[in-house]
Amino acid sequence: MEPIFLTPYFRPKIWGGRKLQTIFNYDIPAGKVGEAWIISGYKDDASLVSQGQLKGQTLRRVYQEHPELFGNPKEKEFPLLVKFLDANDNLSVQVHPDDEYAKKVEHDSGKTESWYVLQADPGSYLIYGHTAKTRQELADMIHQGQWDKLLRKVPVKTGDFFYVPAGTIHALTKGIMVIETQQSSDVTYRLYDYDRVDEKTGKTRQLHTQKSIDVTTVPHVDLQVTVQISNEQDAVIKTLVEPPLSPHFYLWQIDLDGQWQTSLNNHPYLLVSIIAGSGHLQVGAQSYALKVGTNFIIPNQMKEFSFIGKMKIVMSAPAKQH
Image (cartoon, rainbow, N blue to C red; front, side):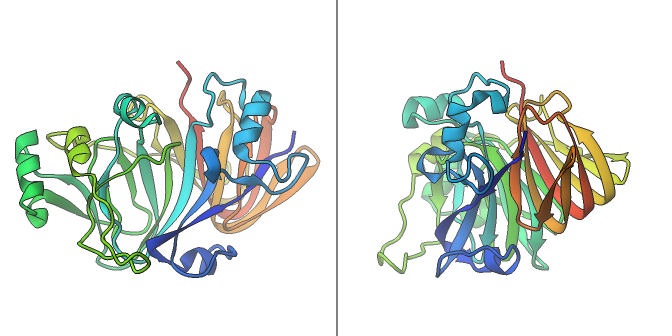
């Protein structure tokens, strides 16, 4: 009956910085750290349970050995992955395959993802989509290095939301910090990397040009995501994306100032991250302290609970199993 609190898994990145330490007070490794995998059951990069009866076990192991905590799912692997990303420099321009291509070519899941923008420097922009009308035109522009003509730049500010289906060319750029909710996959095809040289290897990073051309959606489809806003008690709830638009996950952002008593609402379990503020989670007579950077899963047995305090929350759930 207890929430599953998790310790992040950190990844150094050529484009990373130190904000994961300054904002979330995480004890990150030295150097440029770009990613905190805050709720992860992915292979060897799984989060560790930080307290309670399951302390020290990976989320992957807990998911496979205690399926009852997750509503006895059909999937053998934990389906979602949540990260904080600190773009202290431009990320490579990339694209991810869908499930069909990823399973066939990479023996992994596809990767549809989403970004809720935690911080964005003034004048920041994302790369989201492209201008090519046909796959041949896409290939020609890539091979000719016509990046300014090919890539769509979209202005971005704190609080914006972007849904990034598999097949969408995309990149965060310098000065942006996001919480990313995605399918549990690490299949990334790097299309363009600004001709950067990795300081450690002295070489440019590998590109995946042909695979990128193969999996990109042509022409680009600009999905209109309509954020729905509702009020429950002392909470403002924004439904950022849900099925059928998003076949893999539901995603909400909640602003709380007071108390919000809620439930699983027919979801098998919930993934929760505190992105600002503090408070606590009340489950029956038990109270759990919450602060910025706290991440946990509300398991299937915990039908009703309350959030109390002043905080911003990002919460997700897997889409219904087929």
